[in-house]
Image (cartoon, rainbow, N blue to C red; front, side, top):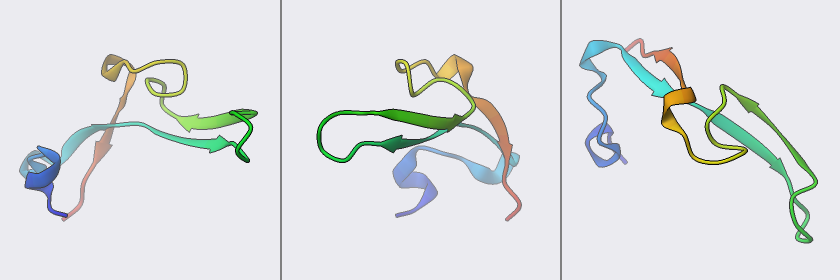
Length: 55
């Protein structure tokens, strides 16, 4: 997968980013942790944080 596949132009060095790790053993989500908001409680890219790419 390339940056083009993701629709990201890394030449500027800064992209918006969020990450979530779910605790779900098949019976529904028990909890989660996330870096930056915007995924866990709904999809809102305005809550993502800047992430610097060092190519």
